[in-house]
Length: 504
Image 1: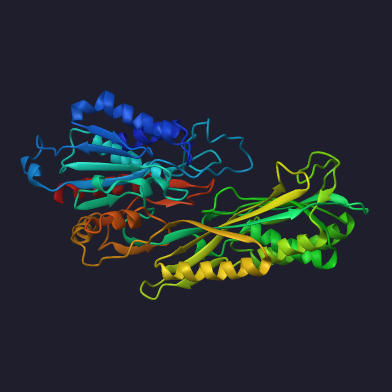
Image 2 (image 1 turned 180 degrees about the vertical axis):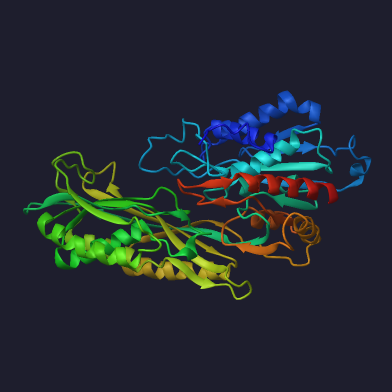
């Protein structure tokens, strides 16, 4: 095991990735990395003919003229856009105190893969970004005129690409480097829409003999709420709701606090709730419930565990003082009923693409906490992300969620909608890319439609005539602390990119 990336090949790609890892860049805090890229162009880019622009949102546009010194015919070729985003998902395991805003990612080479140290690695989309920059800062790669379009805020809401001005999208073809399976060409993706439930409830002071305790679901694998949604992975928030509902039926309690998940596009790995109730009774009931869950999830979640511990000191909606304020029994059941009836997982498989998820929804974040400006109320927030290849299925789920919100008496906000990318099997770019990729792998590449939000859908809406494909190296467990990228796959994908630029 080693942590040295500079020894890996292709050297330029891994050197850029190493520098990307060194600069913290979680979504909404990625602009230091953006400034670093802009400064690199301004200080070192002249020798490569680079020019750079940055918009008000923080997106970056880099232009590089054709490599006429290597092939004079390139001057007559149309420009090609290369696209990647420079923010990353911030997820960490229980063994680290990593601060994504201030701490660099610490890459580790292990078993022919590059991992991080119990955090997300940011290979999504840092390795694609590294490839784009390695091409830009080169003088030995044959290519037509290039337009690098590097976006911010992709992982949460697609805010960067939403703000892109159409005047940046003049190239007739775009190569997106944000896919995660080598030897495959992605020609379509799902769109998305956020759904946020909110409820403000009054707190009561619990005067009966109860014990404050924390009940926690942990040990789950987690993953990407789009590309992993079909794998049967457990969602910690909804599993905790199931546990609490089972307990509540035999031993009612007062719900005081809930913390599960931080991002709506991640399958939640752990969640905890603070309740006031009969500790002895709950401790008796829990082992049977855990045994049932472990039997159900013995394949997909072999490390699943559920624990209960007494809390000595309590604050209203946090473990900090002796205040025993909480939701009433009725409101506690209301919250559990809402969580138990939320649709989650695969809603429908695609009719057009075998094995591809068409429509899904995932509950990423559940929070219950005391309202900061009022000691007598608490706010519940539930954040979900729906995905679909089409627009009307998202509308259908939104209607279902609104009906559920009306029944539960909670508010529902729909936001951050972005379209899917509809496949074009007659794409000229696709035909060329298939030929190039076939020369590097055994036979023609598999054409894929990914159940995740690539920025191509929004780009297509802004530039309908732009031809697009997406590809990338093998990345596994994206959006989780087990994220890793395969070293040999990066080399293969890099060569595909270089050969494609030669012939486009």
